[in-house]
Length: 103
Image 1 (tube, helix red, strand yellow):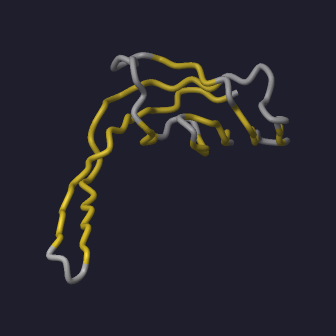
Image 2 (image 1 turned 135 degrees about the horizontal axis):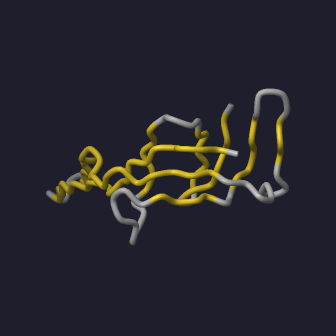
């Protein structure tokens, strides 16, 4: 049993009891429970519900566990024959969530 939801501009395939890393959720506190309403697909034990574009009365509850920074991404820019070299680093902020219930 799983549900496909839209969260932060991305689609996640969510199952109850599992942990997921998403884009940084601004203004969400640790331990806060969120109700996601933008469910695109729900596969139950026997049948599949498909939303056009979203499923009405969908209820996916997730809990915010922690905010963290992802691995560092190095960006190297260089222009040949011009002695131009630039090395930048970037760490994206992410949020760890746990799915409690998906109906």
